[in-house]
Image (cartoon, rainbow, N blue to C red; front, side):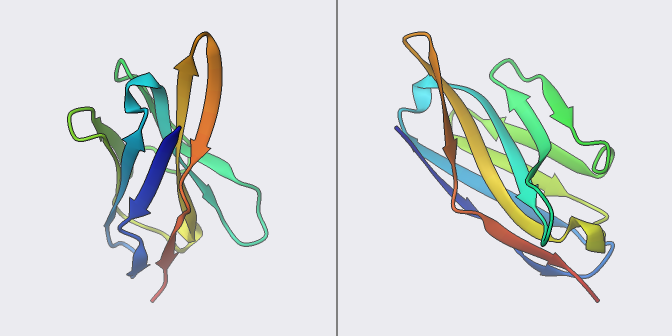
Length: 119
């Protein structure tokens, strides 16, 4: 079992920045991949960015060049640095991890943190 707690959301003006954090606890040694998803009002949940245990990253086209995902294995933390925010980035952001235990994969989600981009 892995527990995830996000923080860092809030209200920011267009062009501003926010840094989301996700603290992982529990069976963190089994974590393989981590990422951030978001769900905007009236839309489906979408992948924002992902990073594997080896450091490989993947970004949604809409955030490339603006968002940066990183992780600290020593601190069991996942981060999402969001720059040049746009109103279209308004959503609830969720931390997500995939663990591998005895050959089986499991998904865990945080409770979500609201990001609102508005003037």
